[in-house]
Length: 436
Ligand SMILES: NC(=O)c1ccc[n+]([C@@H]2O[C@H](COP(=O)([O-])OP(=O)(O)OC[C@H]3O[C@@H](n4cnc5c(N)ncnc54)[C@H](O)[C@@H]3O)[C@@H](O)[C@H]2O)c1
Ligand SMILES: N[C@@H](CCO)C(=O)O
Ligand code: NA
Image (cartoon, rainbow, N blue to C red; front, side):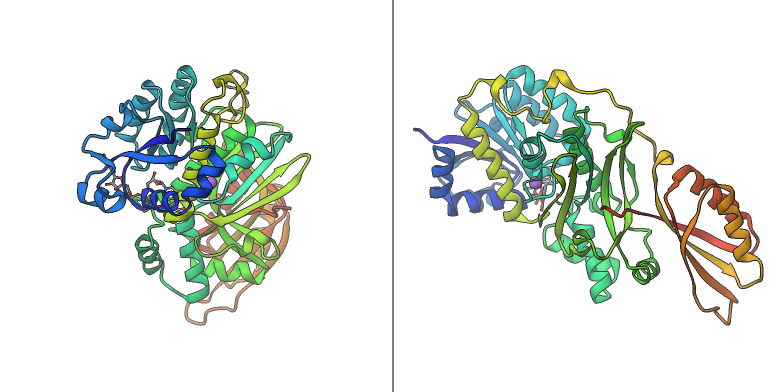
């Protein structure tokens, strides 16, 4: 059979991984796909970069739309990133009957509903394994491997850059700034690294997994997002004293009231496997009612790991290209006419355990005032730690681990605690997930 011809828009880190692995493993990829996969057209902002990547025998075009419209192409690969022109490019390719493979979670989290609807109408596939947790085949697991289950929750370390930063800070004492700089040099970070450090990239990814897990439309606006830029090294140390590690987690949970969707630094018991996932590695825990908890681990970023996922998608599309569209695996795991209308919950209705750190004056009655306020809001204390009094300021830190409480109650209690004249500065609040 003749090889499948593909076009690539954007020749950066991910595209280079795709081209290299396609070349290196050509023979095995052909045996798996049933026919060869050949890069036929490439578009890049810099022709020299494209030539260096694919050589002289591949057509290089200046306008990305010439990839989207090229008559010889069956599948386009979008590795430019960003919202525009990526969105227009993908829609144009779909309009021309091309299947699309993309690594772009920002695009799908914001414009996925429009893109998948266009693909459905045209009978083509849009696949995005590379967009979530880089090289880990977690989309495939959610869409196919776990399709017997009612998914209960997903919790994942799904941003390599921030996990790399947290690891270097904790293990090697690097500064946040130095660790970020190295993550950028290694090609892990987004073009705008605030997407990584402020939790936006993780929110894009957990939004996509939430839609796949629960069969609901993609709803990025419902995500509550908190990154690691405000996380103090002190809290990493105190958490360790209680036997916890702090990780930036993307969490989505089905509750009787609706769906939680959130990203924030989270305390995790240090005995959990996921608490020991370090460096650029990602890990996603998926809890299904039948299978129980399953854990997917691997490189969340980098050229070849991400290229691995792009190529797996290319092989999948190649295999199904001859099947009738209605017999293909649905883009978002559920049949498009079977999406559910479950409410997305605000952060105030989250129920979990909390870590609170307060700075207080060392005076009698402080602790009693604080515990009284907590009790008045139905918050019970599980463990408490008080540090030595600082001689100069006469201040001390009180760290409290609560039992499961309602976030709205915690927030009201914290507001009241802050009005006590013995309490100074901010009260640090972090969420704890047992992930059992
Ligand atoms: N780097 C990773 O480890 C990784 C992992 C998973 C997903 N992703 C995603 O993959 C995508 C690409 O990331 P990357 O790290 O390869 O980025 P990159 O910056 O290395 O490469 C992007 C490429 O696209 C080209 N490009 C951008 N805008 C263009 C335009 N308007 N016209 C033509 N070319 C254009 C750039 O010149 C560059 O060659 C992003 O969506 C990113 O979120 C990256
Ligand atoms: N910037 C992303 C790339 C992979 O999606 C990360 O650090 O995880
Ligand atoms: Na993946």
